[in-house]
Image 1: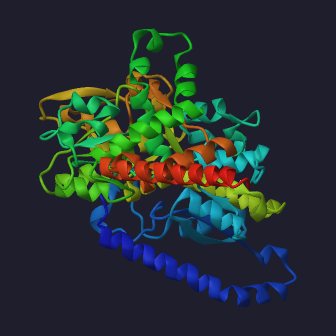
Image 2: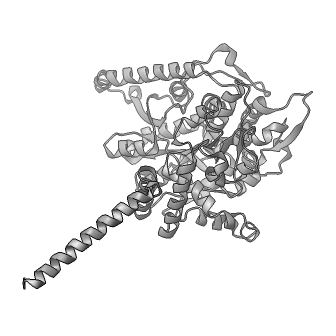
Image 3: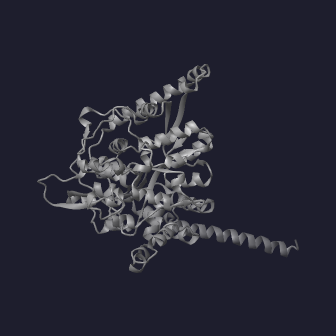
Length: 512
């Protein structure tokens, strides 16, 4: 996949931040100006959007980055996507809107920002955080108009992947489906990025790779409790998860979800013990450095999100290093980032809600989805087949094998685009190597998605127990204590006990 250079992205991001700051500094003047106007038609809607860092097309593409698709569509990101939205919104709805665009670094950062009083209208957290915010009644449901399929400007409901749509409708919070409150933005799975010259494909088929002593100090794992808990839990339950009885059970998906959301005390303790072993085996816990460490060869395997795995594989290719991506056979974590509207921001303002819903729709326009995928490297929830073949053509633009290329395979993406894994209209002819590389990471096969589970958010009690487990693993490993230290501690305890007993005996002897 063609990628924008890091320098261009940083430059574009800096310019966007400066523009946002300029707007913020000038907002007082703007408010005074609007106060003097008697015409509501001239009032500007301020839409406060908060998204992950580097998670939207910020424009600034060079002419050599023009994407020319098979259906004749030409795509070039000149401006930040949210700036183009402002123009589009005025053309479609005749209202001026100004996007005040901000970023957060982690889901927890966003949650803390909201608790400290920061106000946003539209935010884009990951699955468990959007579940948490919905459960806490902090989210505004989408309007009925948003779901009107007869409105061609409703790009999300008309263009979202049938597979993603089903996932959002099947998963519920407080008895209501996610889809009532959240719209998918990006999605993917988790797996193992590895160097096939150093790690066997057989070893990479299991999450147990993380504790495989053959690769001691040459693997990294994610430095967050949810991802580490999920992979370690899968390793702990491997025998059950891959058993024929379990896999072939009629309620397999329900049982898989239940097992991968097991937060009983006994299970948490078992995960802690296994994570202690993993900690001793891996090179490090990491958040973002794993990609670079794989490219430079510092490590040879890395727990990774599919989008970052694609980025690392692309970067490695520039150094003539061909990495592979494996989705372990036990199961994978199916994750989403999605748009939700916050009550604290929308606050009953129907015009602001309309603009927020329109922003979601604009980001779901097929051309916008392609711009975002090109710029950030992750996979959009948009299939866009209602509007043509733009998204599918972009997939072919990246991965379709050349006419004279040998050693190719047929690769079906029908489950994502039409909801039918056998749909002949959505089959790519790709180089054989792509069976475990970029296209496999971006659009997992039906069998991978079949063994996927969504990790739910933890309630207060489970959250407390799992966080304590994580502190125990990350800050103190009881297995690091040397035998001599245990002997010393034992002697000290015995001495203290002896002193207590002697004092009591002395008191008795003196009749005290």
